[in-house]
Figure 1 (cartoon, rainbow, N blue to C red):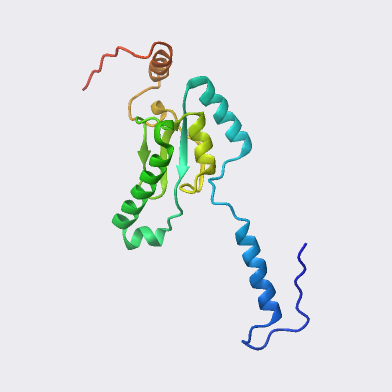
Figure 2 (cartoon, rainbow, N blue to C red):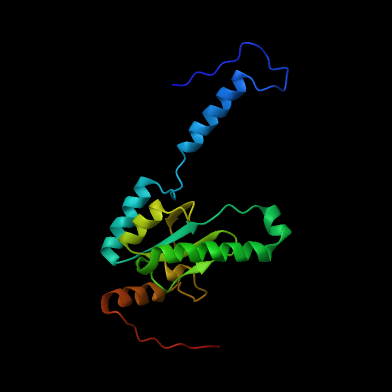
Length: 170
């Protein structure tokens, strides 16, 4: 345990032992901060089990903290920077991430499907802040699935690898 105390109020701008100890404490705290993406252990275990069972699992990844003032100052620059961060992460994940079902909102979040190894890479990645369970494809579509048809399509895809569908437009 580190004990930092100051016996008298600081009244000068000269470096004092108090400031030196405070700077040392800050350096020690910063050294202990990991650059790995965070996820709760319960979520990680659940994601691993699902990836094991299904071959892949959807994840939502927080790439960077973007403030409203950054967006207001230049949305195009933010979009470009976030696309680059997403590309770095996708490159790091390589074949552990599926090529379909990806999305980006342009302001720091993306979604994709990864296998077990992809989850482990994400957990130790410096290219993401955090991740959590993502949504299934049928939850991110504008198709009407209130009758359960999209879930049935998903189940058939998992069971036989393909689905014949009839698309009707109005």
